[in-house]
Length: 426
Ligand SMILES: [Ca+2]
Image 1 (tube, rainbow, N blue to C red):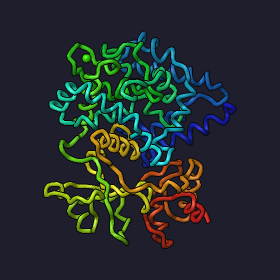
Image 2: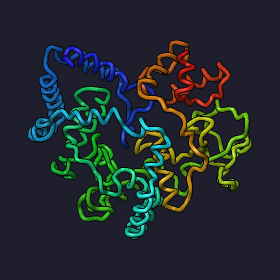
Image 3: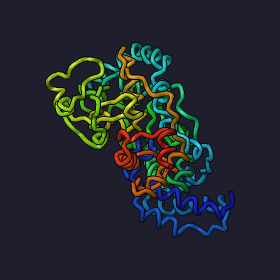
Image 4: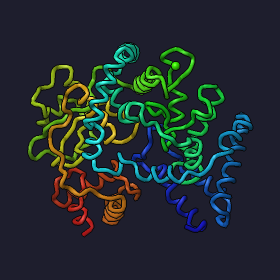
């Protein structure tokens, strides 16, 4: 690709950062990019006749100057951003995140695989003293923490080998994660300046997540704890620190002790799916609409007062779920419905429970990234605004799909597979 083509591409992708659709971010839901900042960056970008390497060097110099003006030491900048290299692998991974690109059932089955359940039970038993202390301090249940640990790093076995200064510099330099990359780089500078992380520890997953419970630098800086009280916040080799930090993060994000994450439900025939996803009601109000637990139980007194939303991740034919406040808290870890369903499913499996009983419609052919863009373009053309075309099906796109479905006599569940896509495209 020529240098001339790169700048417009960066512009296009950069505009996605402030789109209202959820963006793939590992425990990083802080803010979206204000459009003005992206525009300023682009306007002041060097001329497109420069090579990409030259523009990267110019970006490093610019970032360094801004960081030094904020009071960070020039030597620190030289040792970090100054030696950074563009990491193409991080860009590829950013574009192919399994929680956004795989069918929801495939993601959940892989999350709660037999192997992960077996290993998780053995970790629960081996570290029961750690979990006793963490639960006593933070009131976040052990099966949820174990599920996060298992899904993030296979219980500390796969923590990532990316140089995170390279990854984050790459994101800060170009693409749709510029603000994310910069925020995380400043957090890296904070962590090193404060002596909380050594430079040689700065390895992790492609998006900068570190340690057994995969904390990105801002989360590390703001929520990591030295739970074993040895003077270091060591998320790489101390289970107490990693699990205590994850519990502290969830607790401070609003975790509600004793409340569920999600519950599979059955809805009556002719149910109005217009209430999916956007409407919060108490369990009692959902019950009054004929929604009942899929496990045949009844909701007890205090459960009836909990607020919940209804999801149908694979449409009316697939499982339906009530999701509670703790579902949103887990989204702080990773803003993906599939991810949180994966955590809840693995967590339940570790307790010997079956989170989801209804079969998924596995014969459905899911949409590719390009299909999703074509769908968004077509819906927009037809007057059903999707709030932009980014190839990610988020709340705005699902709202547009439901409106099209209502107008065309299709069950308005906001779910599109290949068959319905063909119909919408006409
Ligand atoms: Ca420690």
